[in-house]
Image (cartoon, rainbow, N blue to C red; front, side, top):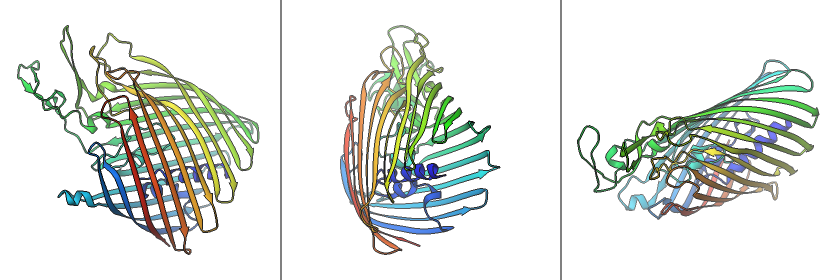
Length: 460
């Protein structure tokens, strides 16, 4: 139990500084470590400045945010249940000055259930449903590679569900069976064939009707609407009470659901023109891995996992190319609680992930996905019983696989700082700074963003 709480506490703390002007910090924390009370109500009011809220437009804005939330946490003899709802209202002064709707709204509903059938059989279920704009809210776990790297206007939906069954068969041998389902749906949708044709260019489809291109490009829905599923089984051997080795297998598949055109290629030979659609990037992946988890001391835990992934892009419309590929897989984590209320975490992951870049090359080969490495670290330090600080850093290095930008790289950096001072048991002040920087080999894709905030939180 101590290990579980440590990991969950660290995970929630890591997201404190990752949040967009603060709301995602609250949204990301785990329900079972929020409060010992059965129910909790709180609200934050903050002022902020965002120097690049409209990525690509280069516009900054002052603003304010209001984020009330309510949570219920019910521990029972064999079952723990948690439910939480958080609402976010954001006001951007610059958008009002432009005569646009100055408000954004976000919603998140979290649910979790832990149940022990007996001392050997335990099940855990979590689900998080979010509506918002910021990548921290939509993507979920910051330790994993991200497909959305910048803020996207609209009511974008994401749902992350996970269920696992842990079984102790003997004192030394146990298994973990896991299923995960991630769903994404972006409001920006409805791209047509004309939108992916360059502005002013003509295309004559098979029916013989000329289409004049608008050059708007593919929609976010066409590029990123998808369902990601995975099933995994770990065989675990407990060498010592503090050391566990495991070998595992995972099957994952990604289905793109928008059914929209996302790219096209003009060829010198028949069929002369290839139109790419969302589902052309469907794929499945098999991953085999081994690892070890060791508790060095009661407050220091480390896990190392490594293996190989085999991916098949079975819907690639260009059959002349090999649709399969191999890539390394890794997941390393070290968590240390060095003082009461103070802890640090370091981690590294390497895996494949979806991307909003879909451009095909001159031979008709589509951009399928990225292979990404994520290095992250966060520190939560309690300076005094009333003053707590959080520092988190994250770096993602991603390489495009296939397509027009094959072997090109993105470098995504983020840094977050947060200070919270408790005035009393019900009120606290907090201030913070978030920095994001994307350096890309693709022209016009790079950006940087700075955000600062100051506010007050009331809780009961």
